[in-house]
Amino acid sequence: MGRRAALPDAGTALGETIFALASGAGAAGVAVIRVSGPGASRAMEALAGLVPEPRRAVLRTLRHPKSGEAIDRAVVLRFAAPASFTGEEVAEFHVHGGRAVIEAVAGALLACGPGLRPAEPGEFSRRAFFNGKLDLTEAEGIADLVAAETEAQRRQALAQSGGALARQAAGWSARLARSLALAEAAIDFSDDGVGEEAEREALTDAEGVAAEMEAALAGGAFAERVREGFRIAIIGAPNAGKSSLLNRLAGREAAIVSSRAGTTRDVIEVRMDLGGYAVTLADMAGLRDAEDEVEAEGVRRALAWAGEADVLLAVFDGTAREPDQATVGALAASRAPWLAVSSRADLAQVVTAVLGRAPLPVSSRTGDGIGALGEALLAEIARLGQGLSGATLTRARHVAAVGEARAAILRAMAGHVPELRAEELRVAMHVLGRLTGRVDVEELLDIVFGSFCIGK
Ligand SMILES: Nc1nc2c(ncn2[C@@H]2O[C@H](COP(=O)(O)OP(=O)(O)OP(=O)(O)O)[C@@H](O)[C@H]2O)c(=O)[nH]1
Ligand SMILES: [Mg+2]
Image (cartoon, rainbow, N blue to C red; front, side, top):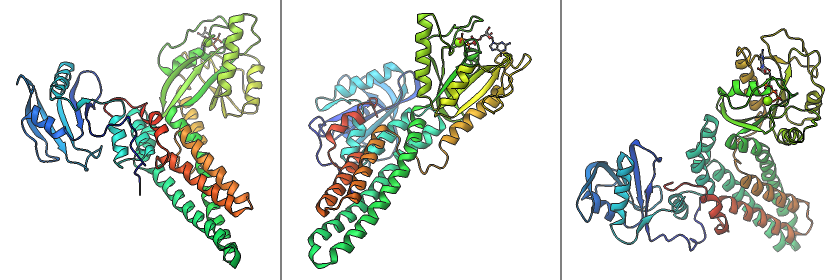
């Protein structure tokens, strides 16, 4: 697969040697300081007094290259170009993970002389990209893997960093290239009857690609949510028990609870891991025509947040004679799936049905029903992903590019002028190239690598 970008941009001085802490900040058993570039072996020689065989770990005392003072005993390891993460010469110092040790190693590396400097955020991955080790989507997958907090995020990021989307896009590109060749043949041979058949074949193939893109786009929203977290809005009447439920689910007193109706005004978001999925659970103002100006603003914000939610969790006061009508109305009007609970299950329950469904009884006081609620929420989230083929479009950028490419193919299929058809297929390929970084990449690099932390 030809992954090489057209040209390195001016901001990437590939001749320089960079270094950074590759492991996390804060005291730890081991910290890894990574050096990449043509001066990596020289830096290792200067600090460790030897350049070991590639991929052979050696225990050495690191010393300051000028003063000779011992810094730490460390495992040193090197990788020879191009068989390294960046594709360059790479040296790694595995030191004890204390702040002073890390500072001293950084100081010693700087003392090695010019040409060795601290890395910018994302610079290691940027170099890997320029050296053809990763395409843009794989680099994004690595950033996601580093940021992954839940199982679903980890699995998705691992697939992406391993090239799931890169392979899919490359497959589409190759087929479009063939369609384009046929479309061009149709133009060249339009006079001798070969044209029509070639053109039909070109379109059938492109049509197949467009259909696959459509399936990927359908899974895109889900994949994006896995990455960013599903949004669950807790709605209900004032005093229904929303904040108590949030606190119970979160396992901490995130929101103020009181017997006064209209306590919560701001939207209170809590991030949690729900059975492997990242979710943002939001408690909000109770739905009513509030007289109080501040509460009315709270209700407005609640409705706005709920309008964007992936799942609505409606809390009905289980001891009330009637389910709250404002909440029932919100559920009836919602596009998102919803789940109803009746609160205060430790007291006598009266509410039996909401829009024809039995609400799940929960008690935030005793914890009864909370486990079942967690499972029901998880099932709703899993249902959102049902029937979707491989979730590969994990970012808005991917969804936009594939959507654009698909639109171009559809225009190619609808058009009647062979020259314009070929041009639309070319547009589709170009857009796919931008997705993986094979063309037109410069403007994208800062977006992709800007979110990396230093050392990645
Ligand atoms: N017995 C019992 N009381 C509960 C339960 N859940 C909430 N309450 C009580 O109901 C009252 C209202 O609870 P909140 O959680 O503040 O209700 P809310 O829906 O957030 O109310 P607003 O923020 O005003 O909209 C408080 O006095 C809680 O202690 C429960 O499971 N059992
Ligand atoms: Mg509240």
